[in-house]
Image 1: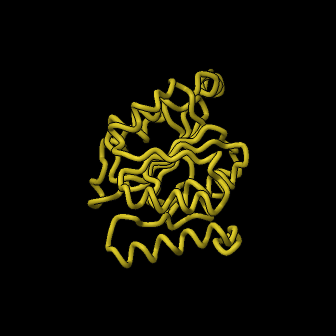
Image 2 (image 1 turned 90 degrees about the vertical axis):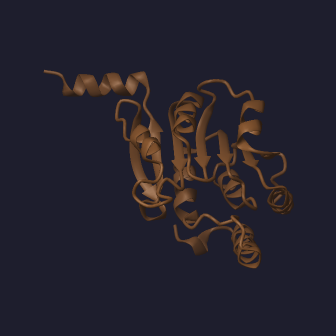
Length: 204
């Protein structure tokens, strides 16, 4: 699916994000592989989605549209960006399924009181992810759930080194093809059944 096959109303949000970022020189960068993210979400149809880093709402709306049964909870620390995101969410008629929580991740994430194994997909698009946060995502995801993690490569090859090591742990995660030409990692949480199947397949 090429980017021009995404809904025009969604592409308008992406263009508005790019225009805002150019005008303000802020950190409201838009995700550059919307087609890849759409295909991933459409294939897996997650129902319980968490996003860290709303920006102006492009990817939160994209995931809600690609998975029509999904409830997307999205966190944004910048008040101006959160306000613009709410406008875009309303324009696309997604107020009932995209729930925006404004404030720093350290405050808004604990306040959600998410239970272990309660999520089907986590999309991290904030600043470089901390190792402990990636570990926490593993706890929040159900077996088979997906973690889509951007900005692992910030500051060069050593960017988010410990987080990348965590996502490369094949006992806990199965790496899937990445997005944004590999800059955004995709990993699937392994479950006991999947691990047992591998053990059986590799046995004598």
